[in-house]
Length: 244
Image 1 (cartoon, one colour):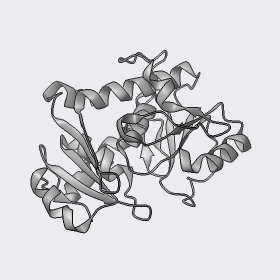
Image 2 (tube, rainbow, N blue to C red):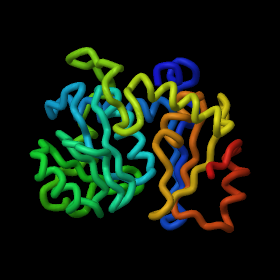
Image 3 (tube, one colour):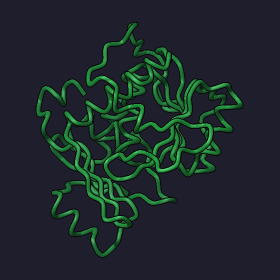
Image 4 (cartoon, rainbow, N blue to C red):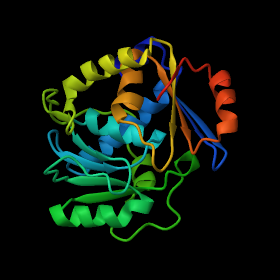
């Protein structure tokens, strides 16, 4: 992220469409970095220390990206599950849980089983709107994160040899793995990868979060795609790689 900020903080890093709601949102490198720092500060304020684990029960979405990157900035390992029924890595005992509102019951059960300190629920609504109704046993991420600082200063040094994405690699290894995936996908500096997702098709965060960031590229997330519109999005967003 530091290199991306130094090179071109204003370039689009994440562009997201949702053909079900008509939503389009675009976040620059600087805006993503701001959200990432806020999320890292939220974790630190909650007493989550480097080396702890967060469970992230969220689909591919721009808010998911800032949660994942915020965890890693704070040195917090992630056990990831994109859809209901997708198991976390073995023996995950998260100190905190981030969840989509429609998976709140699952998240609260998980948090209760391991004595998690916090369960933050996300609406995944346009403009990161707060939840209309906060599910029982959860706290609204959108409300809590907005008051956090735009810069993150860790209380203690983050050990990059510590776990990053459980079942995948350490924090340091994520950079190497992301570079390898970018090369395999044909994603070059300045490129843009189109990733189509729905309730059943969910890519690895390594491919749609880490690889574009490491490569100095961008991602176009197309949620609930309308097949008739995909080619138009490819052209208008200057997509260079289509994820398959």
